[in-house]
Image (cartoon, rainbow, N blue to C red):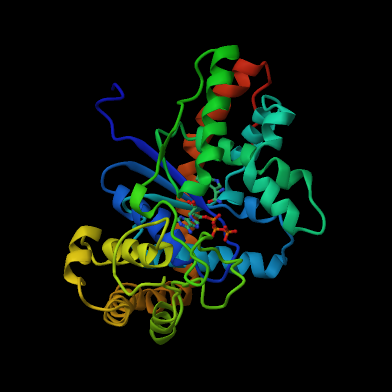
Length: 338
Ligand code: ATP
Ligand code: LTN
């Protein structure tokens, strides 16, 4: 079979670092994950090994990995149509990360902006946080991935993955597919509702800035209605002059299955109040049901474990093939069977 005959391989990951995903995760990445199940051979991973690169509590991490998987299922991932698993259940990621670390320049890793941001916020910075992007490259390359759906903030990490694949292939012979980023322009960076010059993030300093998928619908409404808008009451898209309203327009267009242009026309002559009131309903209607569905998946522990184990087994089969190839190219002995 040639590349043209088969569905593209898609891989992406999300960290279990909060009790709930947020609207930025959803519009920037997770919505694409759901859609790509039908067009691609998709693998999705809860990357718990990335989550320990900052301080963590083992019990909380374990619980959040489970809650993350349940949310992904509630959002529409279907284990019959994609492979969903937890990173630590597939040791091949860490095996490849070691190899790729030896291909990564120290200066190259030092230029990663996420490392600079995150290490500045930590009391102690670890080698693990520094090599985080190398593990991410391993996640992607170990599955011979064609496309990686992520938000804009991950573009630099993807560039590193591409460089490492190309470098390894150049030195040792063709081993890895060089992956492409899949970033949807309109929702590539959803902004914080209270500080629209920053990206929406769980580490938002304002309690109303980040809209969580598991928030109560009334809280979602409140957060939208209290979102910072700009001076001048006009509902018009201009990311530089009106970042608050423009961010809300992007959110509305994405969740309401419409376009920014149509929304501008619809709200011409109306104030921010009407616009935000309607958007509050759109958000609460679209995201409101996710919490109950998540609780349902969490209530059946045995079934959730079954889904995740089956996913990890499928993923391991694929990953082991790449490891066998890479080990041979490097001059390693093959891993012994247990
Ligand atoms: P943090 O809050 O520490 O920045 P995070 O919310 O970005 O973490 P991740 O697990 O790092 O969570 O990201 C998961 C996915 O969500 C990634 O593909 C990332 O690009 C995307 N993403 C995160 N925040 C946003 C955002 N504000 N807009 C668009 N996409 C986002
Ligand atoms: N660093 C990513 C999470 C992540 C990831 C990946 C995304 C880890 N491994 C592989 C895509 C592909 C982030 O979203 N912060």
